[in-house]
Image (cartoon, rainbow, N blue to C red; front, side):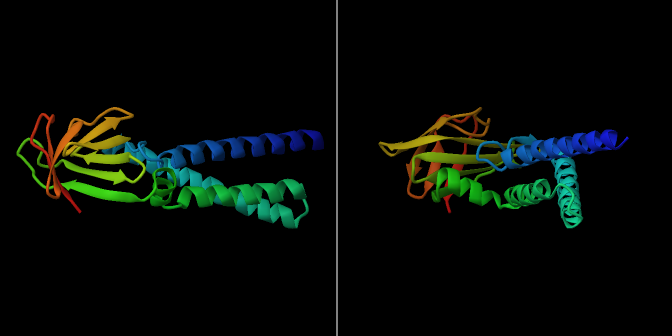
Length: 195
């Protein structure tokens, strides 16, 4: 009977750790640049993932510390406590840290200033980084869409090359007029001003 409970404990620990790693992967991936495309309804799912992650992570951490004091699988409990703490830290780290780590510090930021009646609720922002990368975010009444890619300045024009699917509110060419960008190939008039 003791052997059965030992196997049951091992299976439980493997299941808990696997679920913890899966939830952490999903939550960390959402913080990476270019991965934040979701609808308002998707945010309910992210909240459930986050809640489940924190309950599982803190439960596993408390259980590991309690069992460590009882000298039950001492080395394993130390490893689980350290790994769980690191994973919690990675999940709660601010998103800006991931953006700065992967893209660097933003050099220029532009946001939408004009709103027409068709796209009244849409907001658009573009961050240009010193390494030639950009991060754009568009949000309207139903969808948050984030894109990354490369940019170049050429003959008074900003050209964007998207790595993932381009938002309907974004274009690939913007004419630079003083501190504003005027979209040259957007279906609607889009004007962005430098922050």
